[in-house]
Amino acid sequence: MVPTSLDTMSPSSGRATSASHVSDQSAAHCSYLGTEEASHRTDTCNIVIIGDSGAGKSSLVNLITRTQTARTSDDTMGCTTETTVYEHDFVTQDKILKLQLFDTPGLRADSLGMRPATRAVKNLIRTLMRNATIHILMYCVRRTRSVRALQRNYRFLDSQVNGRAPIVLVVTGLEERSPEMEEWWAAEEESLSDLGMDFDGHACITALTIDECDTVELRQRRKQSYRAVRDLIKQHCPQNMGVPRLTTLPSARKTKNIVLFGEAGVGKSSVINLMAGEEVARTSLGMRRCTLQWQDYAIDFDGESYKVFDTIGIEDSGLDMKEYLMAVANAYRFIKMLDAEGGVDLLLFCIRAGRINAALQNNYRFFHEFLCEKKVPIVLVITGLEREHRMEDWWERECRSFQRRGIHVAGYACITAAEGLEGTQRARYEESRVKIRHLVRRFTADRQQQVWIGGDNLIVSLVRALKNSLVMNPRIRRINLIGQLANHCDMSLGTARQLADMIEQG
Image (cartoon, rainbow, N blue to C red; front, side, top):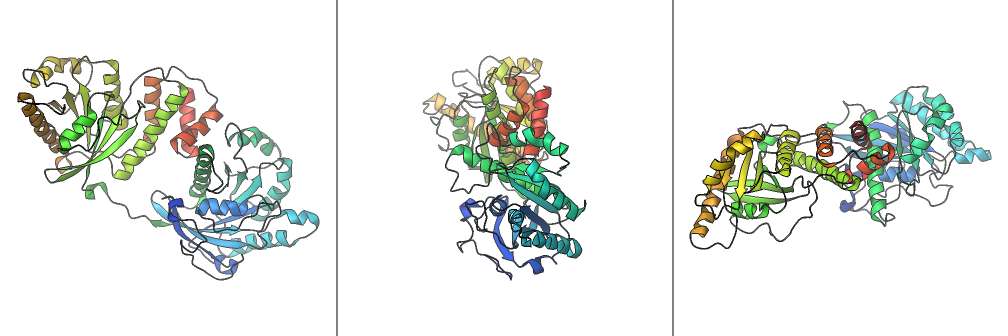
């Protein structure tokens, strides 16, 4: 498949995967064009992929584009015999980058005395450097190749670009690497440096297709591989390149977002049903007792729309490393999801009437101080008061205890959320609905507070808070931790390394 003219592909043409296989980090549009035309483009990020035959260059194209556009081969001789150029719209958080991926012929054949592949690559590099530029030169190798065997191609590439383009290493075939794919780099980095190979970045990946990833672990490794390559592209493509994405500003968002949090069993699902005036959250559903697991519900009342995120907060201390990583994963996904929804308008802290315990204090600090950085109003909802003579009596008795423990709220509602009540207690249930709706309206009216949006940096302080609250000085090798964070948290390797450094430092 060696196209010579621009041929725009349709996602339904059979050459690209279905829409379900294309994430929001990539675009369904992917086309291929001729080398001569591509070499004169100045509005694209040009990525030249070079390596021996069978190294996985075409599979790398498919990984980046999240399609099956490039034809691949199972044997080591490869199937790319001439340079093929693929155009792809690459979506980042705030921009759309137009990529040109130059899939070059394999170099291994030249070791048999044939020179065309080397000449083709040399001519391509010179043409691009003369007419446009090379933003990334990806040197693709399989893990089975010895480090010393990589030298020949590296020296060739280095002599061609002469410092005018970054050379990054992409190591393929690591799907079975134990314990993590990144272990390859940790084991070989020093040897590469000793042999004079100084790369401007690296990615340890598997380029298996979605159909070939028949286990949960392989699918996770494929996602991790995409993120690793994505980060290389974002790092080396110019910041001023690309078209800004159209996004909805928080001020234009009609739905107001409420984070409802508290320990399991305090009646949060019943509070949601009370606000909604109908059963939207089944109280018997029972989310697992897993820190920062959540479920969201759409609620409308009094002409306003709300999205309520029912969240399990901090439950226990002394979690093991696996449980801790799951809490970190949930925290990271939760922040990303809230950012995508436009931020947080209100924190609704739900407790059951009773003694103020350590979990209650931890939840207050975690959500108010760490998650929302004290930038979002927090109100208290106290449930289980149907047997009080007057429901407000409980707060009048206990409010000083909250203040002494440093728990300060902007408002409160003493309620019963128990369904199926009769007589005077039924009247209290309806009274409670009026109270909590008034509380929500009051503290979300007219965006009186700036809507909070977390961003990438917040996860670092959150992980520190989680560790101090939950974990008793766990020890784990840094390289293992990086892989675990990247897999469990669906985060980039750069963020995972930052978190691993922080966790090690305590």
